Length: 251
Image (tube, rainbow, N blue to C red; front, top):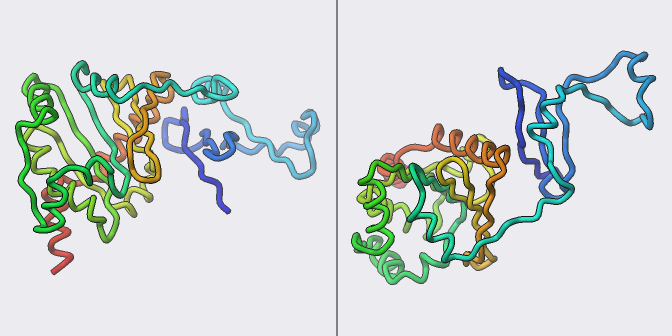
């Protein structure tokens, strides 16, 4: 079975090696660099076995992007504290949505209406909409990219329709096919980035219920998530264009 590798970072200026990747299952680090091949150099390496390979990378690659501890202990916060982040962020909040459905959506009365009629009436004065409208009216940016399967799930179609409500509050809502997300090497994680300095990774159970939120503030880790955001925004398209594309494909 192929490893599930996550790109941790590079100090390359042109997109080539060196780079570090992490095996998400084992925690092992994969180092990508220029092979060390000179026999005289190899002869100086200790514990170098016949099946081993050696690569040369700049010291700063390991300092900047290597793990800082043997096992990272996640910092978890409750849902109430998570909700406060949307009240206190200073200039930007951005969300990557990767799940095929959310229990909170299915519990919303508008979800049943959407399933029955293919459309729903949205509450533009809900607590969420009121707060986001207040934040965007102050010049703050709120955006998200929703990853969509082909064909979309009912939950994804529900959110595509709900995007009209998101946009009415000033949100920048975009969509991306899951196949395109995979080609762009986007992770399957569902997370928010606040002010490009704090990442909130959302943890769900198998029933799509949000359990808790992991907060990450370590600069190198935050940078990695910001790079994911940039890639997602580059490949995604505005929700209304995506909806029109989907409708055309279904004709």
